[in-house]
Amino acid sequence: MHELSIVSSIVESVTESLTAYPGAQVKEVRLRVGALASVIEDSLQFCYGIATEDTPLAGSKLVVKILPVVMHCESCRADVELPGLQSFRCPLCGELVADMRQGRELEIDSIEIEENP
Amino acid sequence: MTTRIVELRRGILKKNDELAAGLRERYTAAGVLVLNLVSSPGTGKTAFLQRTLTELRARGARVAALVGDLETDNDAQRLAASGAPVRQINTHGICHLDAEMIDKHLAGWEGVELGRLDFLFIENVGNLVCPSSYDLGERVRVALLSVTEGEDKPLKYPTMFNSADAAVITKMDLAEPCGFDRELALKNIREIRPGIQIFETSAKTGAGMKEWLDYLALEAGGRGAVLDGGTVATPEPIPIRPKTVKSALELVEELPEPEPGENEPESARVRAAKEYLVALIDAEANRTRQPLLEVERKMLYDSAKGWTLPEMEQVRETFNLYHDPAEYEKKVIRLIRNVRLRARAGKGKEFEEWTEAVHVLSREKHYLLDLIAASGETVRLRGRRRNLWLLLVICAALATLAIWMVQHPDDVRAFIPGAH
Image 1: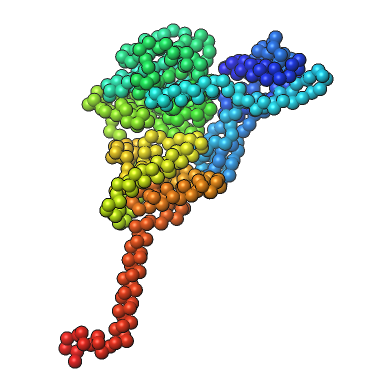
Image 2 (image 1 turned 180 degrees about the vertical axis):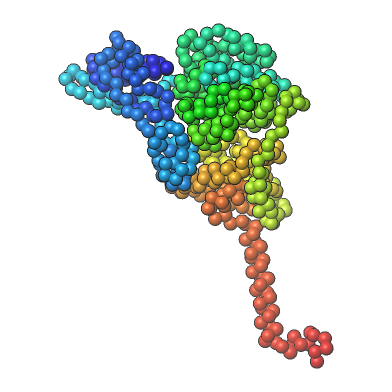
């Protein structure tokens, strides 16, 4: 539902970073999105086309990498990946786990640009 | 034409996060506890908040509320009936509140100054998805769920429930007619957010409000803790086995008194050491996203005879009522273990400071010391060691006497009357 505001932030952020590369064209924008970030990829893609119109990002591709939730299990002394979001239990020992190491990311990892020398 | 990949590694909501961090600093500086209430539309946030504001005011706390909705100021009007200052935020179509909206509405809010508030409540837009992404600088995020929504709501919206610091079940007066499975709801919430505090309430009957208000008072460092004498229909709280804390305190009972004369500087040193250790444990708890509640943090200061907080009695009482000591100790012991590992792995100085602080405490009876010992650290009790020396001296004296007696049987006989 709030994907449009997220995409607007992406456009703003990427445009800002383009000032260092005048005349460059954006080909691809790569995101890292945690499974617990409350963001749906389909909605992102849908909004992306609309929000990038008439911006330096127009026509670029949005690549979303979904990161699974990783919790630290004290009993196993290990970082474990949760198979789903229905239960915050260590898949190895079954204990409840609260120490999150990955899963809320919502960031622009990198952009691919084409420069005219 | 050349292709180039530019690493950005930038948070998409960086702007909101920075604004929220600024707000958080302002709240802390002003000493106001800020809470963000999130739920689906129709859970009863407004009714619950109205009762909370009214009761807190009756307890003498200074409260205010910001309330977000797409349109209308109906909620603000309802909340204003509590007598607290209330300001409506209309988002005009946006499905969540963000830090900028809060910042804007705090500015120029007539008659409201953060520094003169104890509590500021932010009632978010009814939506269990989007608000979870937007930090408003709050210290406590409260997720609400009503008995009419179904016990599996936390499983359906894990992102929201996992990001909450406390959960409130509303409309408990309707639990029976709705066939609400309480155990299942509690289990589902804990499955998504292990260790979360859950309050079962009814804004209509007042059930569960006392526990909720006491929690708020403790979170706010005791403000709003004074009861004005039974305006609320409150059920008796169910005490949770208060065994471990007590027994832990009794365990160290046999330690000797600190030496007279060194009490004054000693208590200042103990206080500094405790504050240092508690700050480290607290920081570790925040780092691992299992922040300690005010009462949990304060429990770390508990002591049978040594220096402790002046309000310890009240802290202990609340702790015993609402917390499970076994769970608490398990959690704290883990944190201590992590802090020590981190200190040991880091610069040598950190570990030295940790050891020194533990050493300072080891003359008196402190709960924290027990927890540290339980975490696997060898804690030498300084008082006990002195006893050991005394015991050694006595043993040596007795042994010398025995040897002398064996070597001089005649002299010994001379001491026994009638042995000639």
